[in-house]
Image 1 (cartoon, rainbow, N blue to C red):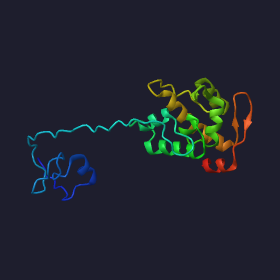
Image 2 (cartoon, rainbow, N blue to C red):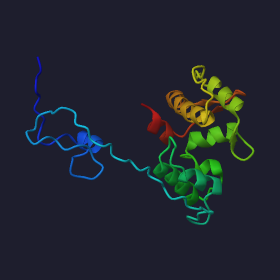
Image 3 (cartoon, one colour):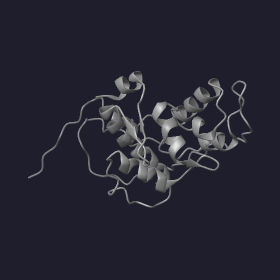
Length: 196
């Protein structure tokens, strides 16, 4: 037995975006006039043109006294990233406003914990020393054994995920333990902000 289902006159916004409203070019097929589902009709598939973003040559973007690092500006322009471009730009602007030329400062919130992690784990040209970072996580009791994915971008994911887990532990304990046994006490404003 077949049943006919009546469709709403105005489809949901998801349907309009996903399938089209029938009026706009490139959208899906229009709803039948009698507002009932119809048999599949042979319709030509809409041609979808890929969106090509223009590549902009970026030199040292100067937002104040300190220019944004060239590599940071290049990374900020990348479309396929976990971190939204607006946040990347905000991090860079905040660092420039504070007069910080370090690439690490322009790529993070540069709060108390970010500065402590940078002091313990960054080497050379602000490159993450993974062994030192894992030692810092272990010193604070953060279990990182399940973060074993070593595909493209794994160091960034490890750093971001580890920082979030470490942030929670440090805010609860009100102390950051270093691998050499030193205990760093975070500012009370920082603890209040991240204590949940």
